[in-house]
View 1 (cartoon, helix red, strand yellow):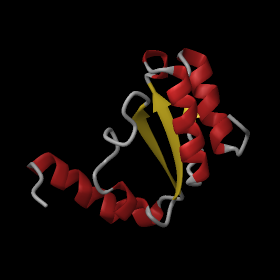
View 2: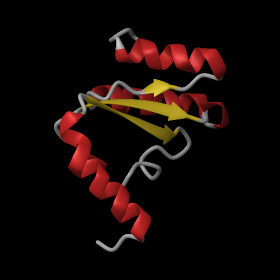
View 3: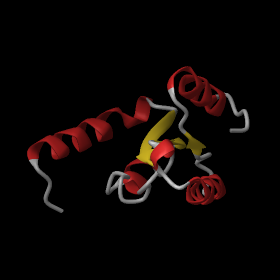
Length: 101
């Protein structure tokens, strides 16, 4: 697959450093979570624990966001709806510690 230079460089850096990473945080747009995901996320991160944070959830339909959250949870990625400001940092912290979100 052809990538512009900066994307190819980022992919190469991920491949070089992924061995030293325990978990990956994927920040996805809550309005379009699958299309905002990196093309090769599954391939690059298949053996890593993943935490999915749904950003811009205030702009997305709450019912649809809830369904996406259920989908990501069923995939073992623990989807979490982003919150503004301090609440967002707390949500990420709680998700990383295994607390329900």
